[in-house]
Length: 283
Image (cartoon, rainbow, N blue to C red):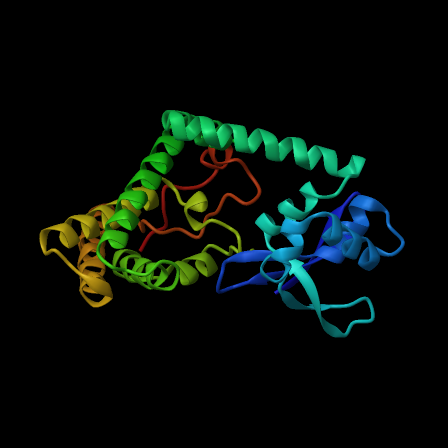
């Protein structure tokens, strides 16, 4: 997926990497925007000469990524993900780059604080969701869900499950057994078109609760059965999802309403949209 990002009305080409789940940005465009250089390619050469670390790791930081050029043709350009882009910005002595550098320093300082005091991380997550308009009750469930997810991935890591691809497969199994949909299918169901839309940020309270139940059940089953490797943990994921799926179906039977809804919080804060949406749709 190709896209154009705007910075002070100037275009920066970007492309979504589905496998890594990351955006890549054209470094030539970034340099042109931040330096007003008439020859960004020459500027990049000089930057690499004065920054030996960037130069030594340039191929890793800036792989070649196919993007659409100004003439509409596809060409491979030097591009970096967010981490790489921010690293390059650190090496640009430009007034326009200063706000980014100050932000990086702030983020780095906050990260050190969170390592020393983990409670600060939880507090900042709550503050972020609060600023977006989410209610306190929803935020508590979302934060708890993050903790449950972390416990599950920690367990997977200890049990020999490979990160990225295998984590994604197991997560899809839990979701399918819980809701009858994989996360990608769920995003389509909720009309979430952007690759970086976080599905759980668009779930209502019950959807979050059953997501937690499926993942917490999977963790307990994996521990109890001492599941090792991908195959055994896939079985645990399916069974954990079935626990949540069974509870969801029973609730739907008792209430006559679906737990999963097409509602999302793309346009309105959750706390405001909550007032407008119905509790659920009749089955």
